[in-house]
Length: 325
Image 1 (cartoon, rainbow, N blue to C red):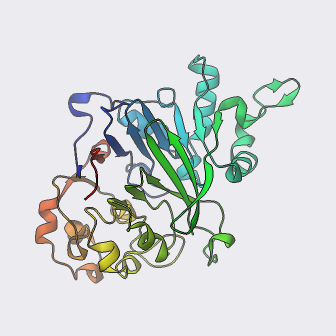
Image 2 (cartoon, helix red, strand yellow; image 1 turned 90 degrees about the vertical axis):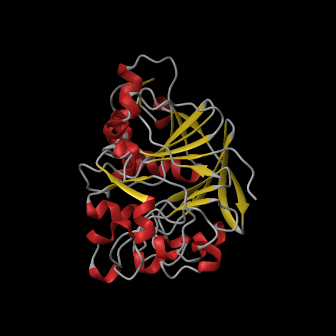
């Protein structure tokens, strides 16, 4: 089971440890170019271990919202090379090497397949010439302690698995960009994450019916990237509503967190109670701000489930460490 909890009460900083329960904290719900809503970067915390999945251009500011900083967070996992997901990594690298005086480099969990691409195409330009190491430009390994997930297979898909303390992180390739890509082989690197084989977070992706359908068979909680319009490089609300009720939209507590809808609306949400969701209560608590084409679902129950708030640091999900039934 899972509980939804408010965090950072009374101005306290978000703790980077738990009593072995799994915690997922969404630091932002904003789109790529948002200013107030932060970006869809999130922390995963269990026991003594934590990892920040993505650190976009507003990532350091989002950490400050919850009383943290890029020097306090010591493990990072980038999913793909768009600025709202990696734009803050230059600050992470420079602060930890030159300002924090920490004896240890921050960890970066990254597949070998993506490491060189991230460095040569994105991060190197801002930091590789800050100094010379034995007469050579700096490398990613000078700023981060690199940890490579192990390539394996899950549900017929090629995935990358990494054991981080008591949490298992499984990375899955997604069909995100370019918009012309029709298969993973044609797409640039982008990944979603499955935590402890219980919490599935799609990552940025176009609509790919098989992707959430497959993982719904083992996931307790699912979050899916979404936007209000169709086209481009993200799944749309209309497309997500075509997912099979039997496998995806019925048997999971929280099926899809439509981060994209909230981004476009400039709103935040706080989940206030535990409710088994179905297609009819899929974030329609925000229906009064949506286009009329989305007014085809009942809102009464969802209003009881959702609560609007203007504090981005309240978006949090605790997943209790219990066996699934």
